Amino acid sequence: MVDFLNLLSVVANPSDTLSLVGVLRSAAGGLTDAEILELQRAGGLDFRRPTKNHRSKVERLYRTLNELSREASVRPVGEMIRIILERVWSLELASQSEHGDQAMANLIKIGLLADKWNDQSPLTLLSFVRRFEAYRNDEREEGENPLADVKYDAVKVMTIHKAKGLNFPLCFCRTFPHPRRRTEEKRAGARLAQRPRGSPAAQGKKDQRRDGF
Image 1 (cartoon, rainbow, N blue to C red):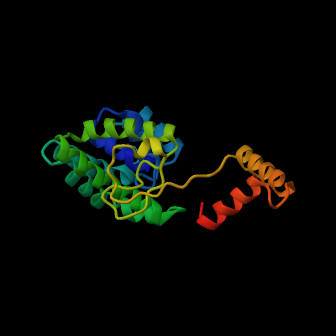
Image 2: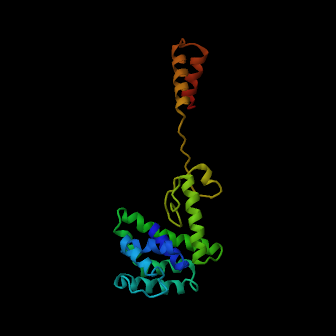
Image 3: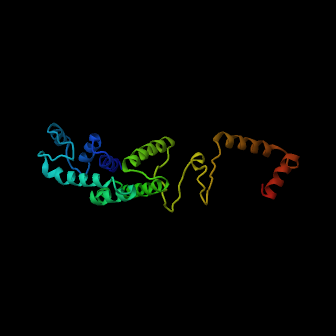
């Protein structure tokens, strides 16, 4: 996902040299650190300008980034993300990663999230990237998966705090007794077992079991 976010960032902001370096080091660029350093020394870390260094490796990528950057100013953000996925072969490259299926699903979900946010309030690609980065950071602090359910028919596991106000049609709240509470319950049961069977406490416990409490 980091490689794709770098790609979105540099398309949205051609002056973002750091993101461009990330793209060049990714599978989409295929350059080594040494080659990127040579490119930097030759002033080639700008896809808007032609460069002679490693031309065979970067010329096509730079041309594609240039075209995408121009289109980003006139297309809806969700549509733009899908175009980027297609032209840079992002899904195909993600499929070859260690967790290919999950990586592909995450990229698709980014596009769905862009549609959702853009429906709420129109976004540029740059504003989407900034909002998504903040969203990711917030969700990481909560320990949740930031892309767990975006228009997907799926089960989402989350804290009660995160679930409040989301109006899920169906919720299951699973509670786990505290270890200290379980110990206290065992001790209470042991004390109860030591009492005579006819004692009021024992009889009350028997009535509770009979009545389903």
